Structures are given as C-alpha cells and as structure tokens.
Image (cartoon, rainbow, N blue to C red; front, side, top):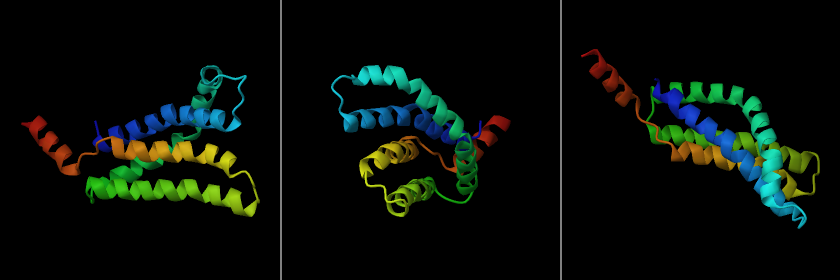
Length: 146
C-alpha cells in the first residue's frame, strides 16, 4: 500500500478519534458544572462528536493525502512534517482570529475549546506517526519484483 496514504490515514484517524475526546474534556473543564461527571459527558456526546468530525473531515483527509503524496516525491519527511504543521496551524488559526476580532467574541476560551483540540491532535498525529522517505517505498517495490 502507498506509504503516503497509510501515513495520511493514520493522522486522519487519530484526529477523528482523539480530537472529539479532547474537545469534550476541555468543554467540561471550562463549564465546571459539579453535577455533570466527565465520564457521563463522554458517554453521552463522544459518538456524536466523532461522527460529525468523521463526516466533516473526509475532504481534509483527501487533500492531506494528496499533499503528503506530492511532497513525498520531492522532499524529505522532516520537511514534509514541518510544512504540514505550518499548514494546519494557519488553517486552524484563521477561523480563531476571524471569530476573535471580526465578530468581537469576548469568550476566548469558548473559541479555544472549538479550535485547539483539532489543531493539537492534527499536529501530534503528524509528528507521532512515522513517514518514511519515498526511496524506502521504491526499494520495497524493487525487492518485490525480484
């Protein structure tokens, strides 16, 4: 299987699985309602959040895979990870600043709860999963032919 596809799939699945959990934990910490336990909140809302993120981020997964695939032909894995990290930071911070400054939203914490879990999880996924150089894939194809 194409290594760029496998890498992209791992990063995307980490985003789909972990980010909604972080979102719920941060929301629970900010609300701080002693009548609601964190476990009950996760049981009640995790599947809904994960399903929404799964559906909404399918286009992201495809674009991410194309970006990794095209960059891996020309660049080293470390450079690719830096470029992807920069792109995710820019993409996730633009809505944050737009909400913060243009609409005069005073509750920065409510905006942070929405945006930060997804950007942090995406960046963590980029750096935690190993992206092998394109040469490794070519060597594997040569070995399979022999």
